[in-house]
Length: 293
Image 1 (cartoon, rainbow, N blue to C red):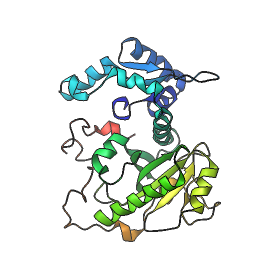
Image 2: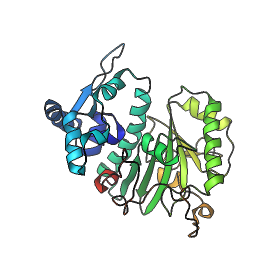
Image 3: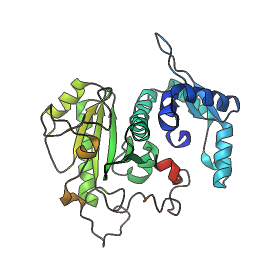
């Protein structure tokens, strides 16, 4: 996960794989001492930030051995990873990863009938759709027998609203070029906007009208990401839906054309074919345990 998503806080690691933050901390300290992982603590004017973990040299060597490749093929650079500490994009990357780790934690601890079935990084998304759009992440969420697929745009308030409108235009252009979004062959894909403040979300809805895209928004820190916190474009402010409902694309967009075989139509890969599908060697398909929780 560190190789795919670059950096995770100790709390995010706990959400993915441990029963408590304390358990995660103890394990990560051991892994750090063996250089399996590396870490840094970003500067804060007041207080102290949590440790942020990245892949270490030992971890890269283990991954390379597991995959039967040379460690150089993983393209892991310690200076670049530790340079995230001073990157202006660190907060954005951590917030994006936090959205997905929160979903994983909900599935692990609170909803036995739920699962985060897929989580693609920004780089993997760029490799698949970069000609048209560059979402911050792609995911599939399963709950109570329903599966929804979505692109995530994480808004930290640093972009003007016309930039957000331009992103939606890019998704519309992609839809017109390829038909309903299908990162997987049987599912259309919604667009989720994860705002850092209620004011940003309200302003977005004031300037956005319903269209051919399924677009839903929520505010970070207000309720569980999988819960009834999502507002679709065109709905009143108080009308909030669970993720499995808000990201559901209308049936008309879920029809598939079995005769369409072009590359633009069949972007991505299915979980069942993950090991066999050829992609850019820098971004090998994750193993099943990387996709299912």
